[in-house]
Length: 224
Image (cartoon, rainbow, N blue to C red; front, side, top):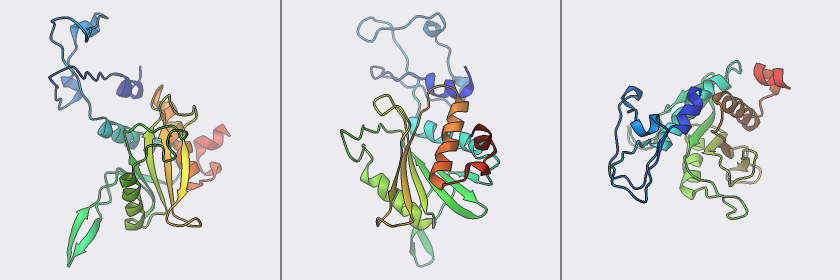
């Protein structure tokens, strides 16, 4: 199993545990005897104490996407900056207030061409909710990024899951007016399987969102 698969498969969320183990680095991960011996605990009965290994999935998903994007955009002339920007929303005289820190910024030279905000939230099928579970606050946040970073393309990126249609989602919305050049994309990334597939999916997603000609990207050009 490669690092990408391990990243999203090796975690257990135990709502019945009263303890959480906080780890400073991966070397501190314990090797549970039950796991190594292919045994497991029942949560409905028994007197054996158990432990839970909990991950902050918002941070995990954000970091995973940020690590894969440079590989996805290699050769395209685009540069990825994680947790960058640091522009202030408001100013009181010379003092900035409400500093922003977008999850991912994609630059072409010094120009910001896309801002991505990752959300470890469960999108709903469109038949159940026309907004698909996207929160109004998240939309407002991305609209602010578009204005603040003078960026015409912003994206909310969610994990894909089985209740959604089989193909990953990428829905583009004009911001503020029907004929606006500023676009907010709502997209999903399937994080099951091998990490190389995630790289290719991100590559296609960015190419679609930024309307990058396939010929500009050597990997996509080779596959076409």
